[in-house]
Image 1: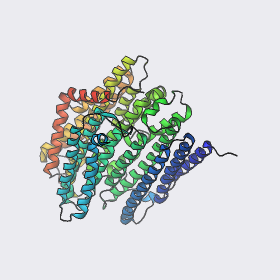
Image 2: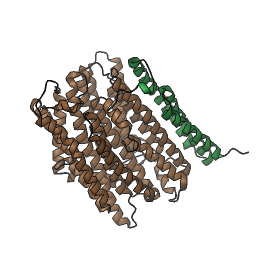
Image 3: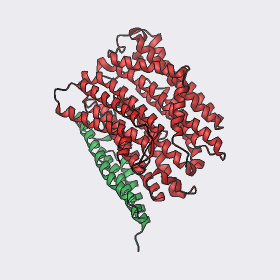
Image 4: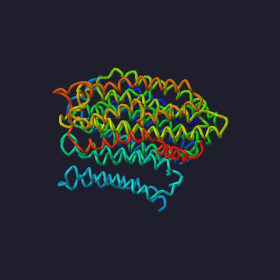
Length: 101
Length: 491
């Protein structure tokens, strides 16, 4: 079997949905952050696959930039989580309920 | 190359200024915090001045990655003005309270840079980096009050949902890249109008991504929590700057994609606009917390903006008629962004002003009782902003709504315009309630009192601008139309 563009796209779609499910369904804030990172990685696969299929380099450039952005996002997310942990001694999303009507 | 660098001088000033402020903050220990705010103000003014020197516009900087035009000039001026006011609000707060740290100053400069680049980007990569530059700075500013659980919690919620939306937006960009083979906006025109499933999916994902940023129903659920938890001056910055930047980027993308998307997307955006303003206004009626009320009101205002965006998309066969209608609708949209910035920044400035003496947010509407007697000038300003948000003449809010609805009527969608006016009437109820509390009730022991004259002065100036531009909106409106025209023909 030849692995073609569509296989990569299907893999990326599966990863994207896995990440989205992680953000929406899990209650541990660290897992939610990981979910977002998985979503960003799945986009990288799409860019790389299309870049290769089209013979165009700008997709690869996008992937490199994306790494940096995903890393910055994780750093900021963890920094805010540390701030939350210092106040609440917990990082469970269900206990983040101080903002209610 | 030198010409390219000259053209982006305003952005370079912001970027260099942000680094300078960060270094000064770290290494000059004796620096007082109000000097940092003065330095930031200087950087922002420097960027405005640099912009005056770079008025030879170019649509093709760095091989088509950026374009400067009257459009970017208009938007940059708006963003820098919003940042100037926010720094003004923050400075008196930060020099007195220890719960805020001075990282705010480089962050707001970077956020402003991100916004300016969002309006100038003509390439998806630049756009994405700009969006992230703005968003990440704003996540941190929202969580800026590190001792308050509400603030850090709001920061985290905004970060998770913002990053989620960014991932969706990015997936849309990736699919669009797959269809066009390039990340440049100019290549979108090559997508055939029957682009098929993948193109529709890509544009849909882009719409969802931007929808999060401008708080469009059904992607608005983060808005009340984040607006409530963030420090008030940051909320004002988010509500006006982030929304305007997302809208500017959206206008640019939509404008090149029109031939591909108009048939399907115009009705869809129309429906979303109606939903957004109706839900925003209905829920705002029930709020007793002024920040949550203004959050829902900002959702409603996103609805009016979407209504303006939809008029741009209206498919017409007659291109001459189309371009006139589109120019007016686009001008109305840009004018509304300015109007919304003036009135909303004013309102949040006053909320931030009143919070001063207590170390807590002035968010309980009941405690605005008797403000007209203790702080007559501030109460009068807040009343003007509320009238303006409700769209009552002669204020800038009325002029903004008038132009938007005029565009909708001219595009032949009279029922939508009527529904917009009904919504404005509905919203008058909750805006006027604040005025009633301020003017009809006696001051109580627990009523809020502010102290910082800088903020009071800035909000009074904004109130005067609201009325002034409400009486004679035409000159600014002409500037907005010219700014929109500089985007060129669609497609």
